Length: 86
Image 1 (tube, rainbow, N blue to C red):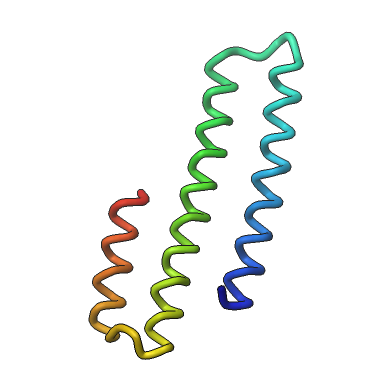
Image 2 (cartoon, helix red, strand yellow):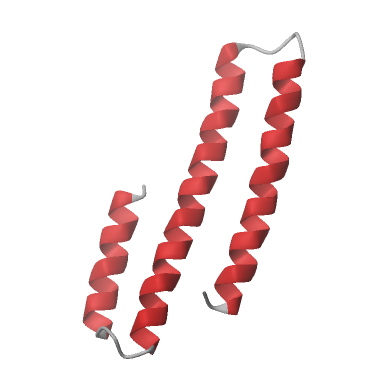
């Protein structure tokens, strides 16, 4: 994994970690609805999907830099990743 991607993944994971702690506090509270909790867990899920997208893009770009695939293939794969991970 390239350094820039590693830093971004770590930053995002720490953000998710904080968000999950916040959701746990919501669950511990008594005045929170199921809908509010589900909304927050959905946000966590979306954040993790974005991390996965970042990881997959970095993988493809890393392989392209190594000459293992062409620039055209990189663009095609990244478009496919973005469609699948939305």
